[in-house]
Image (cartoon, rainbow, N blue to C red):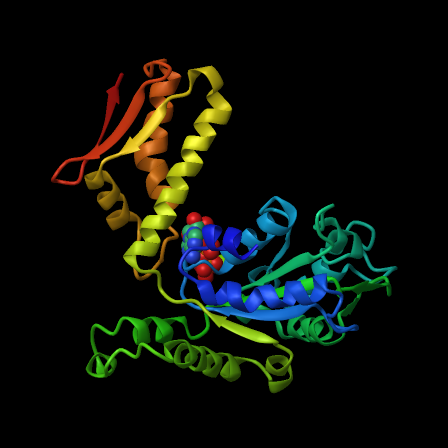
Length: 323
Ligand SMILES: Nc1ncnc2c1ncn2[C@@H]1O[C@H](COP(=O)(O)OP(=O)(O)OP(=O)(O)O)[C@@H](O)[C@H]1O
Ligand SMILES: [Mg+2]
């Protein structure tokens, strides 16, 4: 499992090392009763792999990255929106129409034949309304949630992930100090992880109550990705594209290649300190997949040929066809 996860989640080994023991405890039947299997807080800058971690885990456990329940806390910023999560009480207007998002059926529905673990992701918890944070407390502590119709949902077979960008800016500054006070300090190598963690946790403590913070089993701090990690992510994206061509086009399939200049240009455009690797996929899509799709649509790519992406010195992409 660890090696599969390492392939899917690039450059964040700490995340894998932290999460796997909770899964193993559950698989060994040694996870405590009356609590979720584990509650893990994922902190760090945008586009560094927080959501990707849960998707990768879903892929490895269930065979599909979609086998997880994701709650965007940004959608529950107002007190009244919390009814969407637990459903309205009987007798209230719209009671029958509001299907609770966190019903037992939904929680069980993200397991698979391979594993009974449900992965639940609460994204951007800092945006949740206070009443939602109170609901979360019950889930994290006792693994139960009472719905509007008074039934309860059990979360004992759930691995719960909370993500947040709290402290992300400070974490970024501490890892790549190019100006200001931090630039004068030596970049800490050993013990860096614990330093980043304490920066993140300080921000979390400022925002959430001690009860909430105490219910978190582990905190993972995601580092900004370095160039090598981004290259690996680019390889993943390109391999995904190649796989798509083979499965979708069958006999009409062709090979894909990228010159070093084109790779470098994609990385320059798709990776930034501000958005991490978030734009990488879109950059490949815009400059490679879409133009290739246009050529396919016009029937201009002979089966078995090679499509090469190149970039000129001024940074313009060119698509070349080779027999
Ligand atoms: N460590 C990583 N390994 C593999 N792919 C990654 C990694 N980090 C980012 N990516 C790529 O960037 C995209 C965005 O990453 P992800 O959704 O995990 O970001 P995030 O950390 O959850 O950011 P946000 O805080 O904005 O939600 C992914 O779909 C993936 O293509
Ligand atoms: Mg995310």
